[in-house]
Each structure stands twice: as C-alpha cells, then as structure tokens.
Length: 507
Image (cartoon, rainbow, N blue to C red; front, side, top):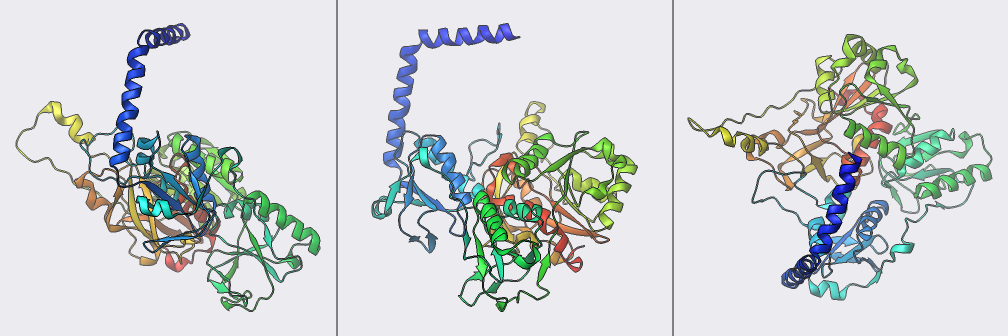
C-alpha cells in the first residue's frame, strides 16, 4: 500500500508539471472571477465580537488569521443597528481579499439550496458557532470605523488579573468568561472553598455580578492574605479571567451570606467509552475538558462499569451511541450511583438507554414522513431518504439564563447545532426545560420539511431527577468538532452546577 501511495504521489507531481499552463490559467481565472464577485457584493466587510468577554472573539479571530485573511481590531466602541461592538475584542474582516469566497462561507447564513444531499454539514456560519454578535457592513460604515490591523505574529489572548488588592472581604469570578470553568477547577484543586451565586448582586461601587458568579473567602483558604492573593493572581493569569476584590458582603440583590450562595464540589469526571459509544463525540468531550479546560477525565470502558467503584466520581458523561453492552448490571450500578446525588450528562442514544433503564425520565418525538403516490422509482430511494437526514444545521433556541444550565449567558437567544434526527420532547414540568427551540428554529443550513415538526419547540436540554441525583439530557451536540465555542458553556454548566439544580425543577 505504501508503494501504491508513493506511485500516486509521483503521478500527481508529473501531472501538475505537464498541466502547469492549464493549472495556472485556472487559478488566474478563479481570482479574476472572485474579484468580480467582490466588487458586485454590497457587503464590504463583516464585524464580530462578544462584548461580555474576550475569549470567544479571540478564538474566532485566531482561526481567521490562520487562513492568512486580513483582520482589523476596533480602536473605539461602535454601535450598529442597536448592537454594541467594543474596542479590543471586536474585529472587522474586509471582504475585498483573495479569500473572498472563504470569508463569505464563514459569515453567510443560508437556508435555501439547489440540492438536498450533502457530503458534510450544510452550515458554516462561524459567528453563530462561536456565539458572538456579527453583522455585514456597507462601505460607508467600513470607511468610518476606527481600526488597526491585527498582527498575526503577536496576536494572543490577554492574561487575566485580580482587580483590587489583597485582604478583601471576598473575591468574585464572573461566569461570563469562556475560561471561567478552567479557573474554577484550579481554585477547587487548590483546596479553596468555592461558592456560586444563584442570584445576581450589585456592589456599593455599582458593579453587577450575574448568576453563576463564583465567590471565594480568604479566611476559609488556610492561607495568609499574601499567599492567597498570589494564588488567585496565578490562576487568573493562566485562565485568562479577571477576579474582582469585594470590600463588603452587604450587597444589593443577593447578600453574600444568604441562601442564594451555595458551595460547589470539585468535579470528578468519568467519560464512558468503547463498546458502542460514538468515539467522535467522546473525543470532542475529552478535548474540551483535557486540552481546553485542563480538567482531568477518566475514560471508563462500558465493560468496566459494573466492576468499578463509581463513588470515586460525581459526574458521569455519556456521549451518543449504543449502551446495550452495559447490561443489567451496569444499569443497576449507574442507577444506584445517581440516586446518591451524582450527575449524569448524556446525549442522544445514551438518553434512550437511560430512559429504558428508568434512570431519569425522557420522552422522544417521532416524525412521520410518508411518501405520496402509488409508485416511485426504486432508483430514487437512496436520494429521497438521504434528503431527510439532518447532516448539520444551525437552529435558534431560547435559554433560561436564570437556570444553572444557563449561567454565564448574557442573552436568552442562543444558536445550537444538530446533525441528526433525534428529537427530545419537553418535560411536563416547564422548569425542567432550560433550553428549547423556537417556533421558527432554522437559522442556517438545510432541514427537510418533514423534520420541522420534530424540531419546533422541542427540547434542546431537559433535566430529570432520580433520588438526589440529576440527569441532564442534550438533544444536540454542544461540543461539535471543537469549534462550537458558543455552546460549550452549557456542557460545562452541567458538570459544575448539576448539583445545585433544585429537585422541584426536575421531572
């Protein structure tokens, strides 16, 4: 096989050499056509940014720069059609570049197509994937914008810092930051008692902290003021988050000594793998935790579950796939473990298996798709059924930002990604549906009309309870291919805050 590959490479080089005139002409014609399209396009640039934090904007900008696309950073705040783009973490991408078609593909939203069969996903709207605001700009706005070019060689995400000095009453970490979970784990790993605010509060200085804000008390750390402060500085710097010193516990909204401030535990995570588990989804989960958030995760094969002491974990992650190989013994082990007060986070086929084993309560929406007519061509069957598959599209959903699963999100409007026809019925308990699709859900990509009833106002996330435990079910993949930054926080919230979800809000 190696010899065949080597021969194929040589033949490709030979063909390129012999066809160099034609290939160069094709390239020239391509860029001439691109220039015509660019000149005719009324969208002269695209702007994007997330005003509440820097990381998601940074990572999208980083990806764009990797393709040698020119990028500019705002030097002053800009408000366009009511949307605010802040200097420092908002960027403009001019369309008039050789990579025009790639830029267009990154930023366009499309729901109509000439064909209904796709090799891969049907929507690549990157700002939706990264969860940032974005907008197409005309030439007038582009010319008025005060910008500076971004230097790819020196572009980096700014380190975090502690705002305020040592010896403060408490310290607060806002959950809006993308890397807040990374910082939270390091704080817990350091042995600090970490609490989460389940209600927003405001300080005497007028700063408001939202739900999900983490609070730390130096007096409970066992360290002196300087050592505690130095550790906070270290964690803030490496996690790219800011930590705020608070001068008093007397705040408006939630008082820092009230029942709205709850302790959280260090996540001890097991991810089920092998034996029918979707390896791609499991890999995406591992990447998010291990590579991005620097959180350890045990890869636990299905065959080992019934013989493993699950009490060493408090979070169990189950990607899409088949779990039949767990058997009755594995099911009984997991069920008993959940009842003790632990958290399962599951998607797709894992939810079906859990429901069959009566580990939580989930129902699924079936879509009927009947072919009309007396007779159809057998040869058309493959294309007709293929068109009904959802290969990958982007949908509009509504998030309850007061729910622990919604902590850290500034807006109820959220874009999610799905690449299958798994539809989850909402719970009869309306408090158990923190994320649902809208009545007009398709935002970008292809969806066969027969699948629309399955998506419309169905559940994206549904929370069930068993004993003192929680089962958090996902219909969509919030970690798709490691570039869906916008929904990663939903998954991380499930890991960190599943334990604080009130039992009365589950079903």
